[in-house]
Image (cartoon, rainbow, N blue to C red):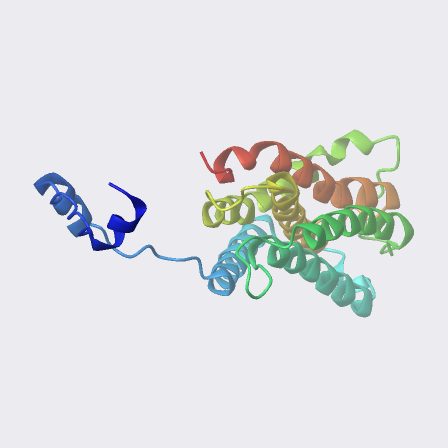
Length: 229
């Protein structure tokens, strides 16, 4: 047989599929794709309800009426954006892509971690009669706020990890850190509205430190759930 004979040859028919393979193919259903903006909205809504529930049981800070309302509102909005922005970069990819915005997520983690610690150290108005002052002498008593802040961060981190499960081939630690930083900012918002300890060390290193610690813990733990196996 020569190459000239090849065009005249008939194409062989493939063997028929086995009954088991046909049944398996027939049982396949379309894969449900991620809906990032919907997932972000769910995370945002569920987390805010959770944070509001914590505040309901913890009660609002009793020095609120003697503090500058502009400062209270502005810092609360800052914490809220600190929650939303890192979670947005972690969950919502650029148009036309499937993976989260890794570089922007990393930048958001760094800015939130440094920014809220610095803000708390620098700006922390106090009520002359109702605010408490711990300072270095009672700094260790701030562990309660640290625990409340990390508990507040738990829900957004867990919900985000569920949404991203199996969707992060690379860079999962920075994305997980962004979820943690966002959750830590939700914790900071809860503490901002609950805690009447108003010295700079407590507000900066404890309230702001919740963001840092939550980001580190999330980066260490969450990739075990989100990395593809």
